[in-house]
Amino acid sequence: MKSAKDNLFVSTKNRYPIASRIEYSENVGALRVNNLTNAIESFGFKTKSAKVQNNDVDIWVYDKNRSLVLVSEVTNWQITNSFDRSRINSILQNLNKYPCEKLIVVSFNQNIQKHKTFLNPRWHIMEIGFMTQPPDYYQVFRENWTDKSKCMKPDSKEVHKHLRAKIETLFKEIKLI
Image (cartoon, rainbow, N blue to C red; front, side):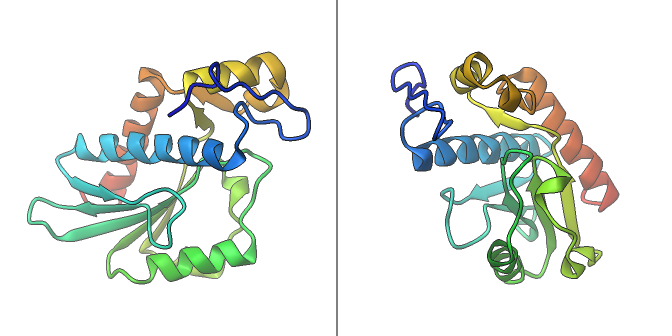
């Protein structure tokens, strides 16, 4: 991952800490997926994760018997972003391939419109409550776009503890632990 300091691109038009919006999206997406898989694995599960922005789920979770118990789609979006019909259909198609619990991870509940399919008892939506940024990206946002940085946190031990607690609560609720 390139450092924002090494490849700084401060533009009021693009408003990203590095020049490539695609690279930025891949970096922050991969960060959230990595943090979630680490939190899940801390409870003894095995995980497999896909390359960010693929045509399948982002995370597969397996129990001790190597049985698939959960699949997840993961986002790390700003509070102003939301799922459009195309993205909802893509999520449905990806998650419906698997006969297990389904999890959609969002930064904010505002990101996802309540869709009747998401009300299925095997579908779970987990709100993180903030976007996670690599620390140098967060610093660029804080220095240049204070309004955006208010909904962000830099990747840290505090963020990892928060994600682990969210996973623990959900996994207890759906009786995985």
